[in-house]
Image 1 (cartoon, rainbow, N blue to C red):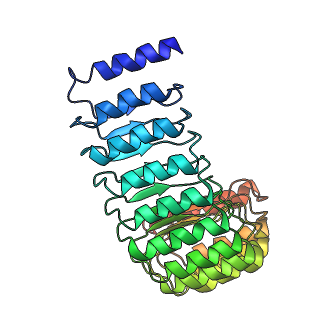
Image 2 (image 1 turned 90 degrees about the vertical axis):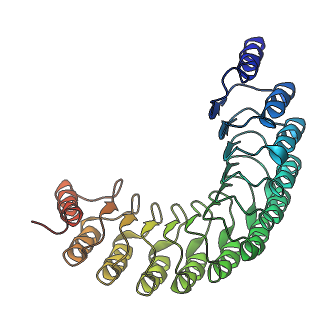
Length: 332
C-alpha cells in the first residue's frame, strides 16, 4: 500500500509540470479515501484532464464525496470510470448530486457496483437535470424491477442520453414493460443494452411492440434472456415495421431452428439491419439453411454471428460466403 500511495502522490504532484495531461488511468491500485481526496483536489483547477479511470479501487462513501465535490467544479472532465468500486446507494447519492451541476461529463461508467434501487433513484433524478451525459453504464448493479421505474421517468425528461447499459440487473418482464413504454416516446436513445436481465417471452413482446413505434434506436442488446422461439417471433413482426435498427444482439436466447426460421423470414423484408448476433442459440444446419436462403435476397446484413451453435463447417462457410458478398456490395 505504501508504494501505491507514493506512486499516486507522485502523479498528482506532477500535474503542475505537465499541464497537457488529458488521461489518467489508475485502475486496480487500491486507492484509499485520503488518496482520492488528493486527486479530487487536483481535479478542481485542472484544465486539460478529460478522462479518469478509477476502476476496481473500492471507493467508499468518503472517497465518493471527494469526487462528487470535484465534479461540481471541474470544467474539463468528459469521461469517468468507476466500475467495480463497491459503490452503493450512499455513494451513488453523492455522485448523483454532482451530476446535477456538472455540465461537461459525457460518459459515466458505474458498472459492476451495488447501487441498488435506491441508488438508481438518485441517479435517475440527476438525469432529469443533467444536460450533457450521453453514455451511462449501470450494468450489474442490482437495480431490479423497482429501480428501472425511476429511469423510465427520467427518460421522459432527459433529452441527451444516447447510450444506456442496464444489463445484468434482473429487471425481468415487469421492468421491461416500463422501459418499453418509455421507448415509444423517447427521441434520443440510440443504443440500449439489456443482456441477462430475465426478460423472457413476455418482456420480448413488450420490447418488440415498442420497436414498431420507436424510430430512433439503432442498437439493441438482448443476449442471455431466454426469449425463445416464441419471443423471437414478436421481434420478427417488429422488424417488418422498424426502419432504424441496425444492430440486434440476440445471443444465448434458446431460439433454435424454429427461431432462426422466423428471423430468416424477417431478413427477406428488412433492409436496415446490418449486424445480427445469434451465437449460442442451439441452431443446427436446418436453421442455418433458412438464414442462408434469406441472405440470397437480403443485401444489407454484413455481420452474422453463429458461433457456438450446432452447425456444420460447410454451412458456416456458406453463410460466410454470403455475408462477404454483401460486404462487397453483392459483387460475385
